[in-house]
Image (tube, rainbow, N blue to C red; front, side):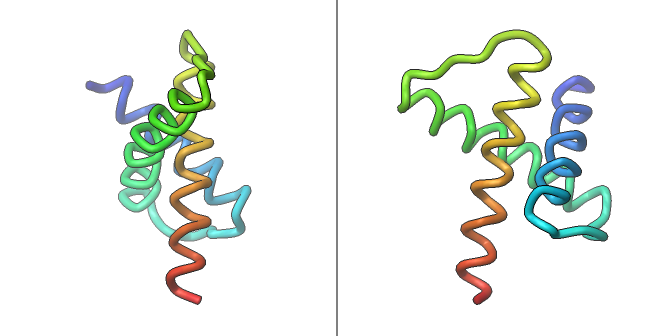
Length: 77
């Protein structure tokens, strides 16, 4: 559980920097990272890509969080 929270925070922070969404706050970063882990795991799974280990988990969550942020930016306009 603690590892999931740490991965979520890291992924949310990195995805925010990649997409230029800075200053969102720790809770938003955590939420984006956790949601990103779910989205990234599914999207990469559909593509037949599987990353293992701690770096793989973080990478998967970052990919998913970037996707979530991109979709959010398109919805907000």
